[in-house]
Amino acid sequence: MSDIYDRIVSERGSFERLIARIPGFRGYQEKQARRTADEMLRKYTSDLIRQRLDRFIRIEQLIINNGGLAYMTRTRNVKSKLQQLKDKIDTASPGYSGMWAQLKIDTDEMERLYAFDEAQIRHVEAFDTALDAIEHAAGTKEGLDEAIVQLDMLAVDALNAYELRDDVINNFSQEHGS
Image 1: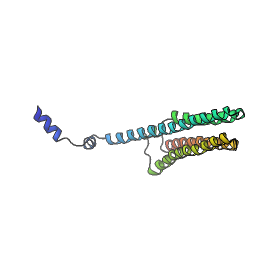
Image 2 (image 1 turned 60 degrees about the horizontal axis):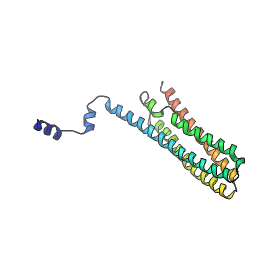
Image 3 (image 1 turned 30 degrees about the vertical axis):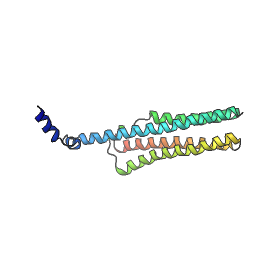
Image 4 (image 1 turned 180 degrees about the vertical axis):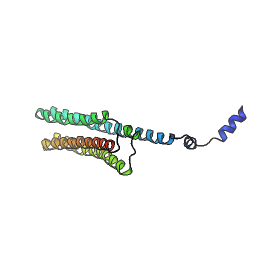
């Protein structure tokens, strides 16, 4: 029995060669990799936004504790938009996942989707700058209105960009007859 085992192990080919022998399996693997990548990207982006939301909540407490009750309505609105963005990303139908099983996405379409995904990461980075400005303004009590308005506008831009991404995905489905 040991001779047979040794021969099988020594003659063993790569996993890729084995998979290449199964009709359609490589395509399935590629689709699965795209699904996994989409899920990972959405989770990563959602986690980044949650971190920024948590930071904003801490800054909001600082503002309120320093006599800034007048800012509560504005900060609550910004918080709501950031939470809405996070929730949209968390609950979005899997963009790539649902499409891969049915559609053949060409390179240009794929690049457009990647551009939207990259834009979400850029929005997160812009949130950091806006949060720095709010935190600074909360400490100096100068420019706080403008800083909050800036973060609010960034949150609206990010929400609009995510909705455009959904529109692009829906257009792909319509263009490809799904």
